Image 1 (cartoon, rainbow, N blue to C red):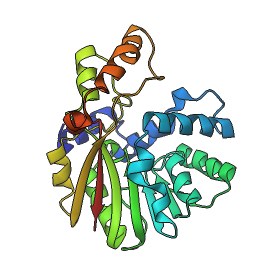
Image 2 (tube, rainbow, N blue to C red):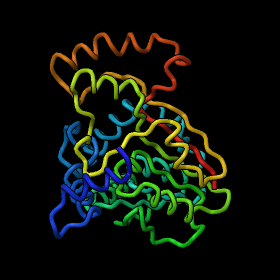
Image 3 (cartoon, rainbow, N blue to C red):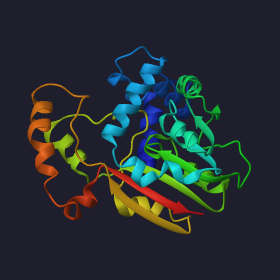
Image 4 (cartoon, one colour):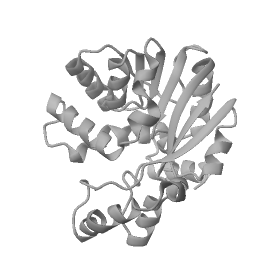
Length: 269
């Protein structure tokens, strides 16, 4: 889907009085990421523990690829911080963190999460396509799973580039159109998480590289390979857990690497 088609989808779905950004904001106020997996009431410490445990079980590559401990003393901005699971890790490892999210409810929960972990952070409701920060404010910008859900991804990238210091680094993740998970979804008719979001886009590796052309250095790393699901149930989930996960992970990583569901970009201004 092109950016123009995404914009049209948004226009078709909103009311006359609601802008695309407001439609997206409303959606993410109602759809906190991985909420379904939590066993404890929202806003409790146990709730955040549930979400964190599931996130790093599902995304086991994150600590290695992101390197939460690498940014002590650095000014770090997370665009689309949600309830702050990653941002708390950065803060606990010494980064000076700022987190923004378009939706108010995730920011409210992120503030509770920070309180439970006794760490400091500047948490604000803000549109990532219009960042209220001066040029060159941050050493690092982190946006994991955000560009694919925003109204105007190129504009968000321009803003990320603007607020980075010269030589600053951004770590970005989008979904890979040519991935094992996208293929399974199409073959077996299982919807992808948040596929019904007002804006939802997948990228090929060349497409992702093209939208990152404004940065001086770009490295794209495909990641996110099959792990057992706890989100889905039924026969398809049982077959997936019992057979597919094990069989897929027997294939040498060098052969399947380009088909990871997540495309992680490490870019430099």
